[in-house]
Amino acid sequence: MKAMVLRVRGASLALEERQTPSPSFGELLVQIEACAVCRTDLHVVDGDLTKGPVPITPGHEIVGRIEALGQGVADRRLGDRVGVPWLGGVCGACGYCASGRENLCDDPTFTGYTRDGGFATHAIVRSDFAFSLAGYDDPVAAAPLMCAGLIGWRSLRMAGDARRIGLFGFGAAAHILAQVCVWQHRDVFAFTRSGDKAAQDLALSLGAKWAGASEDSCPQELDAAIVFAPVGALVPVALKTVRKGGRVVCGGIHMTDLPRFPYRLLWGERAVLSVANLTRQDAAEFLAIAPMAGVRTVTKRYPLERANQALDDLRAGRVYGAAVLVP
Image 1 (cartoon, rainbow, N blue to C red):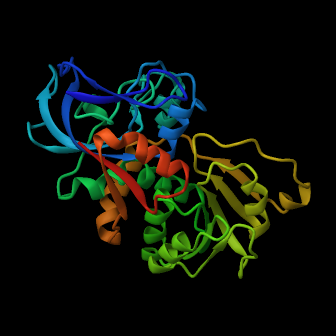
Image 2: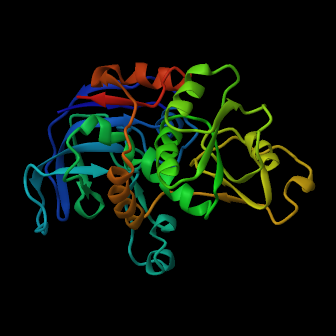
Image 3: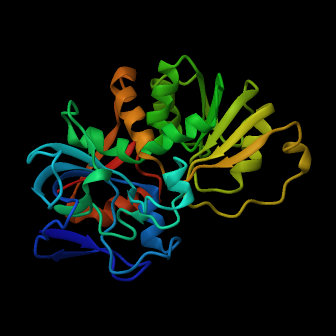
């Protein structure tokens, strides 16, 4: 097998030839068809997230075919297409797992961060954290759903019943979530980097009511806002756009520090919330809804060997929609 491996945080990934591993009890060997590139992968590679080991193979938006079954796996078939997300496993015993909040597990594993991920031709994954993708015929189109889609869905649930919703940072997650919001008859307002007309045009083409720069005045008061860009300074900006009782949801695993801001922006029972990981229930809900909503992902393909270029393009804001590695 081949893998793009991070050996030193902050350095480029290196292409390595490895022996294809065999799955252990409860695991699958997946032959990877596509793996989307997430901003969290940047945080892993750039050293913003440091709890995981190195060397490590990044990538946690995996779509592939089951090539081998480990012992104890009885509900899978060779050749089935599955999707593999960021949350790679939980302990199942802590208070969070016992109360249906496995996304907050005290002893989790993460695909592409604490266990090798999808920037490769093959990956070993836990069978109970691999989602059936029966009916999803395009692996490249499906790959961004495994994180951008799932985290967007969880963020939307935390935003409540908001009718008018702002999306700050119109990248992989927002371009998927905007389509779900439009299908649910919500009004979408897209906030992008200053002068990013391509992202604004994409938002409008997907049904957004308005698209502009984050520093622009929003034409309407919003019920909620979701901040996907990892920029803490956008939180008070988002608070300015929401009504009393509104919510600002931070949808990323990493964000720069929040600046000081006046209490009046929070007053009026506004709330700031964070999203942590996902649950398998989130995946079941979203993967059922995405086809009904007619979600189509905008993707830019890269061969596996160009993973560093994909990361550079994402870092520089040159990707509209989602970058996807195709082994």
